[in-house]
Length: 283
Image 1 (cartoon, helix red, strand yellow):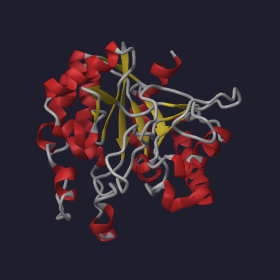
Image 2 (image 1 turned 30 degrees about the vertical axis):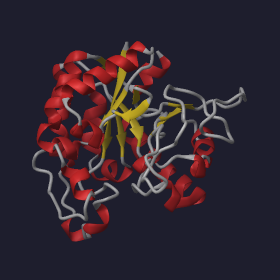
Image 3 (image 1 turned 90 degrees about the vertical axis):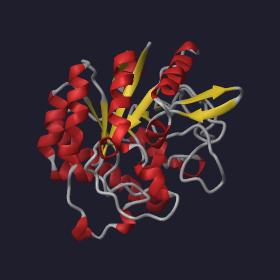
Image 4 (image 1 turned 60 degrees about the horizontal axis):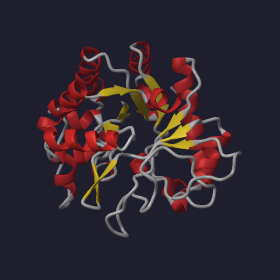
C-alpha cells in the first residue's frame, strides 16, 4: 500500500511553542539548509512527497519552492502567517489562505489543491475553514489529528475517523451525507494498540518513538487497509537548528530526538512505499 509522506515547510522559529520567544531580529532563516538532507533522502529513495509550504517561506525563498516542485514533489499550502485558525477567525483566515495560494501558484504555475493548518488547528470550533477551502477550490485538507489527550491540548479531534473521509458540514467527526461536500480530510495517522489510540504520524512522536515501533505502527495501519500519512518539519531533522530556552515541557517536546530523526525518516523510506498526499487520495 502506498502511504503519504509530507513535509511542513516552515523555519525553526515558526512552531507554536517557539515563535513568541524569538524576537524578529533573531529570526535568521535556515530553511534552505535544513531541507537539503530531506530532499537528498527523497531523491535517494525515489519518493515524491507533499510539501505544505508556509507562504512567508515561499515569499522569501521562491527559488527553493521552484526547485522542490521541479524535483517532482507536490506543493500544497500551510497558510501564510503560521497563525492558528482560532486566532485568525474566518475573515482573516480567508485573507491568509488567499495570500498563501497566490504566492505558491505564482511560483509553480499550478493549482494548489491541498492544505494543512498551522498547529493542526482545524477542529469543531474552526470547521468553517473547510467551507472556505472548498469554495477556493481545494480538494483536500490534512489538519485533523484524530485524538485529543486533554481538553487544553494544542490540537486534536476526539472521535474523528482514522481514515480519509469527507467531513459533514456540521460535525467534523462525522462523514458527510451531503453529496455537495467535495473536500476530503486526510487525518494524521493514529494507531490502536489494545484499544488505546497512539499518534505516530510524525513530529514529536516520530522523534520520541523508536524506529521499530514506527514500523510496527505503519504495518498495523496498512493491515487495516488505511494509508499512513507521515509528517516532518525540516528544522526537526537538522542538527544545527537553534535551541532556545523554553518553559517545561515545551523545550523537551520541541527538541527531543532531533539528532536521530533523519535516520528514522530514512528507515521509513526504506521499508514502506510513499508518495504524495494527492497521489494517495486521487490515484
